[in-house]
Amino acid sequence: MLTFLEILCVIFLSACCSSEILYKENRCKLSGNLEYLDTVALLELNLPEDLDILLPVSYDDYVIPKISNVNDSNTQKIGKKLNICPPPVVFLTETTHTSCLINSED
Image (cartoon, rainbow, N blue to C red; front, side):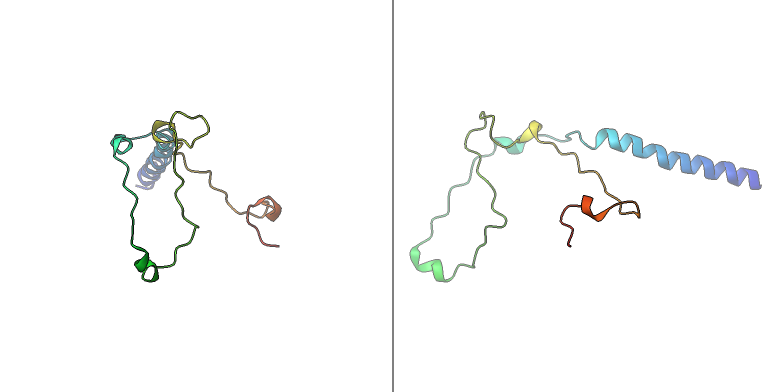
């Protein structure tokens, strides 16, 4: 009975580890369609000057940049050109030096 459980555990653990390989291969591929690229641009909202008092304060922290010319090589990548691969995960261990980390406080 013990060997059966050992074999079952080995099969289960190997199945769990092998699914990550397939995930890594497919995680950077686009899925779905790109119909959102064909949508019509929204019109700019024009408000009367009287309403400036009622509007909330806006900050420039989350401004979405405008893309002027899609064919320009200096513009940002959109659609199929966009890299959707997540950044690598950094694990903090005893061997990781804090000077190698971004945004580390002194």
